[in-house]
Image (cartoon, rainbow, N blue to C red; front, side, top):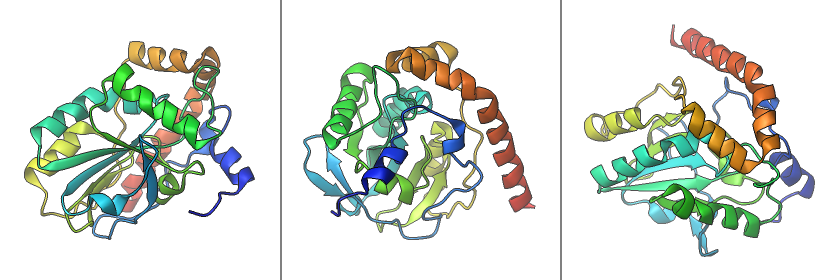
Length: 236
């Protein structure tokens, strides 16, 4: 693995959340019908793994982090899907902290990233396999850079479905009724995690993380509206 650029790594692992760090109208990465892009990552034991290590079976890959309310709000529903579809491998790709704060700080080393990821099974009952992205977010960038996106791959490693926001009900629908189809729609209105859960996750990250979210919320809502309108225009 090449050494990441220090400046790029620091910019990627931002110190304070700002909505401007995201672009919800441009979903980069392999689209449905295309071969999934292989990448290097780490298991929780620190050993190197590749996405292709998991090819040969159906895969559901979701991005997430300890400080992301969207991802944390999905954990139990996705755990249940993993039990329901026991022929499917469910993976979590641990990416940058979506809402870093004084208690869950921006990542400065792979060790820190692994330590944050290791908290998920105990504190959030995450039961899926967790793989940890490189410090500079190489895999995250390849797969769209969204905080809580989801991909479904067939055993040949082809993307059959992806969504900029992980919606458990859509994942269930594809796995139960549409595995043999190529699902071109890749934008969905994000779920709305409960206010108590959102508050808990952000407060755990640090009061400054909660404050940054509140400051950025009006811009976030506008960005989501713009994304909906952009998708509608593309679908016409």
